[in-house]
Length: 215
Image (tube, rainbow, N blue to C red; front, side):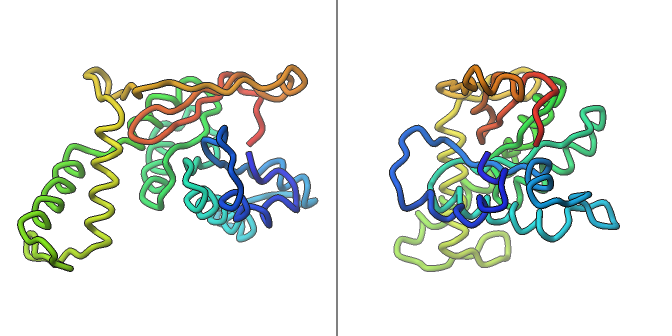
């Protein structure tokens, strides 16, 4: 959690300039930040994140990518709203986030499934790679009546690398990573957070056991 104080967002770009072998991902939180800022709400009149929190969210995404670690979106507070969680998580993945905090065990499966690439996405990525392999040295190729260029190739290669790096067993759409990792807070922090486990699906998903963790 890299955004719990007013000063923290200004340092998000700094993670890329230091060597932190134990750093696996960066995430952001709205509640602690709102408290630090003296804000009465973190939402605007439409119910969406207010500008300050959208800014911090974007900086977290860019900071994580610059540091070469997972970009983990903040929690979705209504654990009974599975449809809303899936919609928000799919949109989050489309922006570049690779996982999401969970506040309740019921959210783990929807989060895992939402951040996994679909069969259609994987197949399209393979076709993009194959099209460039058929035209060595080309900067752009035609596919399905559209031009795709090097950025599309890099995206396709990254997606394929994700799917090959982690296993995809059958059953409820869950993916089992090649290795699991967990983060257990120090004893002094356990009053605020339960054990955090992650790295599931095509992207790492952090699932907080318990409901007392503030995002």
